Length: 187
Length: 187
DNA sequence: GTCTATATAGTGATAGAC
DNA sequence: GTCTATCACTATATAGAC
Image (tube, rainbow over the protein chains, first blue to last red):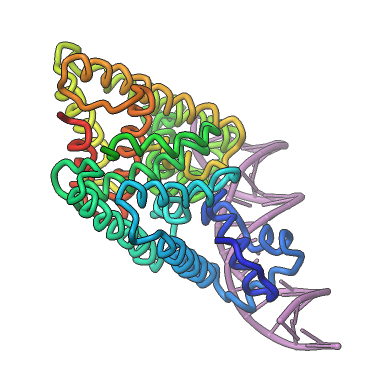
């Protein structure tokens, strides 16, 4: 997920993403961000006149990169192994950090976000839930995953559990909590 | 002498709780709170000199009340019915509001909270996970709940799923998402 | 494209009158 | 116990020099 950056704009988005994941959208300022990078706040305003603009740029890049990361999961795998790879991608992204998923961080402070953010975060959730729905469909067909009842409802519950596990893993500093969700669905 | 409100302190804690659930700890100010209640910010400082003091009071009351709510669940019930009652308690608390669980709201912005908060939120999570562990133990004994693998890990996953469902239920304005978690564990 | 300087408003917090 | 008044600081944001 982490790429190299030469220009200031990318640096800003990168650090803003991390700060939102660690502290939330209202938990950091342009000053925090500028100091961290070693520039002035006015330089951030040059690229992102309003904080809302920065937020949207961060969400778009995050969703784009996460989409790309999921695409790397071998389509030939069995559904349970795909799920393990999916969980593993989350472990790589969050273990050893103080971060949670950007989507979860934003969804948690929904009432304090600029209105445009809701739709963007919904899109991120919907994309992941759709991918998991396909995964569960395959797993039910193969018999490699346990899918009680509706496919989409199971996918929603699974994604909610994974997101919630990332939150509590950070809270308790217990990285293994990311795996808690697996036994419930792996046959 | 003149006490317009029955108990200003309680009013403050009550509204502060709601604001944190809706916007997060860094998403509201003493001014927001004061305007909402119809007092001045200095009156809030009289009861809670620092915002951190208010936060701790809110968490303690919330945990206390939630503990009391869970205690009302009939111990004679079968485990699956206890779980339905537990989910129902969440529905009563959050449906029709723009709120999520206070614990989840705080855990999501952990990096931007005063240090004392982490322990308090951990305590809240631990209490719920312990209650769910007992529940799953009963359910496994009765055969009324499906518990794959470790009891405590299943309880952690279940609580994470429930918390995550509340977050996404608000995000999508789909209250039924609270029920998504049930089919995975009810036998 | 980055800076200095500044505008305007909001923040948590305190002192002291009543 | 609540208020007015105010503090020092921080927030987002803008204007204009270089």
